[in-house]
Length: 105
Image 1 (cartoon, rainbow, N blue to C red):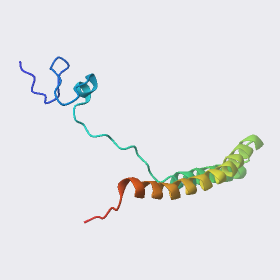
Image 2: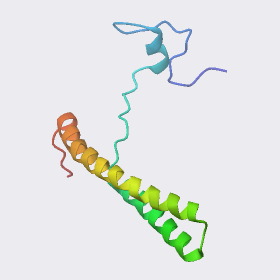
Image 3: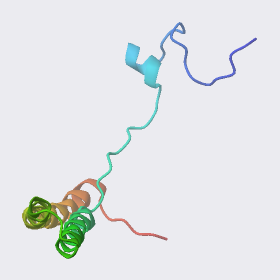
Image 4: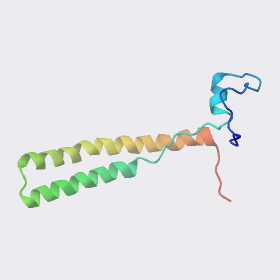
């Protein structure tokens, strides 16, 4: 039975100007760009989750350690939110440098 796959097999001779073992494996696949989503919504969601947890612990009469942990998580999340705001501001600058102008048509 013949192999109908368009992929290069390891025993085929490599082709191209600079054949290496890597080109046999990867072929001519384009480089995948890493994800760079906006981070502020994640930080806000974390703050909201800790705030809800603190409210539930306070209303339910949970142990003080639980309430302290949820309030502490909220307070630590505030500098995290500020950091993500700065990260997203720099993200816009990075994307403008690497991707240029983007227009949808």
